[in-house]
Amino acid sequence: TVQRVENIQKNVVWWRTQHERSEWQHFRWICTPKCSVGGHHDMELTDVDAYRCSSCSSSRVAEKHWHCPAHNVHLCPSCAELPPETPTLGVAANYVVNVFPTLASSTTKQENPDFYAICPQLAHGSDGLGANKICPRDGRPQCSVVDALEDAYSGKVTHF
Image (cartoon, rainbow, N blue to C red):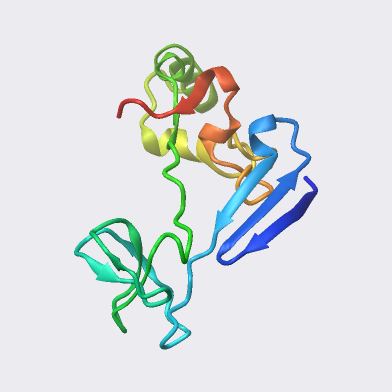
């Protein structure tokens, strides 16, 4: 899949792909900012305690923001964008109950296979479900099982 950078601002990169699925055509990558004191420490996300932003000097209430614990450097969301709260992709219960058991049995040639029998057959390697598919997140060959499923069998996680 061809990828093209559209914009770069502060710690954010936007890019576009020509993937067949429209939801995998526009991406935004939030880069972890480096600490301004050491310059070599990646900052961490935190949401504890009130703080003063080291970039704009504003006093802030406890909220999600970037923090370097080694140097006690804080960056507010206005000075360094935070990653979005994205839903985790999951497998539909319909797939788990109605499709997967038959697939697991036929692939492993076992009536009731366990995880150790299923994993090498369906989850990874040259025969895994994502073996011949491009990963929508990094654009490289091989993708996760949930990304390899048809749209009807994957979506936003709503239950464990």
